[in-house]
Length: 238
Length: 169
Image (tube, rainbow over all chains, first blue to last red; front, side, top):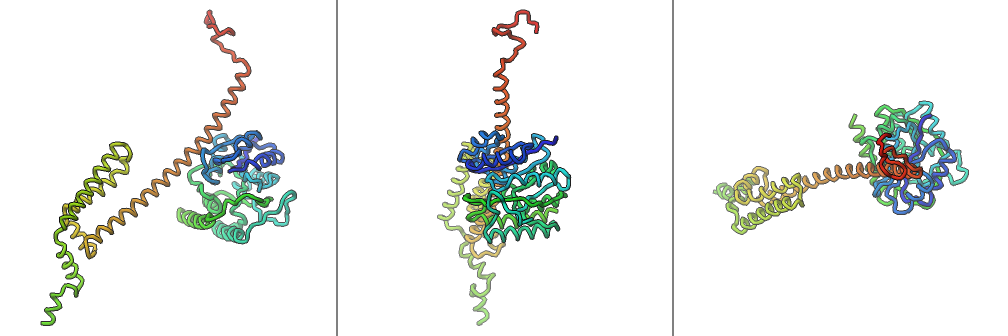
């Protein structure tokens, strides 16, 4: 029996984290769950511990990418072989975990990305289907296109945080090669250049109701700049 | 006669204009010299004092010591400054000083950006290790509590806590 872990980074999610953990347990009872509390100032840590999950707590806020990597390092240290990552805000429908993992289990890919844009006909049963602002959708499309062109494989949702990976990829993302600020399209390109097989499968995502997005204020501008720079230097590294 | 006139007028071609400007400032005004010397000396003393009090690491002190030393050197050896001014094609020695001061500040800022990036990486690394170790510690504590609820069997001491007199385990 292979050891499976679901990594859930969370920052100030004490209202949702328990239902997220329960959702994962119900739809995927075989996996263990680790919450990476990224220096939350609310009760995320206590709520997650109360729900019986293992909690890794950053002493202060370090950002989404770093929280993910803390989870990766934990998985690597503890010898997990199949890893799923999903967001702690309830955006990702846990019933899709199996769709991601089955690709890893059949060894058809090393990393699987859950795409909200593949198969748009599927509509969430207990939540609204994912909709995004036009400008954001445009950005996603644009970086999706760049990524697709570079790796010569169609990628529809490079910003998706809903992914599954095997141990080989886990070793790579736990190393200092992993870009900890806004890891996204650039990681896909880096993984492709390191020779990993990438696959996208459709997943269900719900709209994020009241939480402020990770990409707000000046952050989109920085995000676009960072993504260009990161992709550019990745291509230069060879 | 006319041609001779224009030759004597220093503003007409750039080289003679530079030489004229340098000649005008042939010696450093004594007040400038005193201020530059005082500034250089105070700066050197301040840096050495900061290092002595461990407020500034030796690693970073050498840059500032060099700056102080260069200020002193240029104050005492004005010809060097004039020579550099001529070499880079600046008009007055003061613009040479400003140019190099500006370049130095840009470079030192870049150096600090690199240093901060390295510190941020280490900080991240530390916080991650802390989180991993904390979880491990909590798990160990939990396991220990669990074990303590069942009275531990101590091979050396008997149930009343006295040492086993026979010493045979």
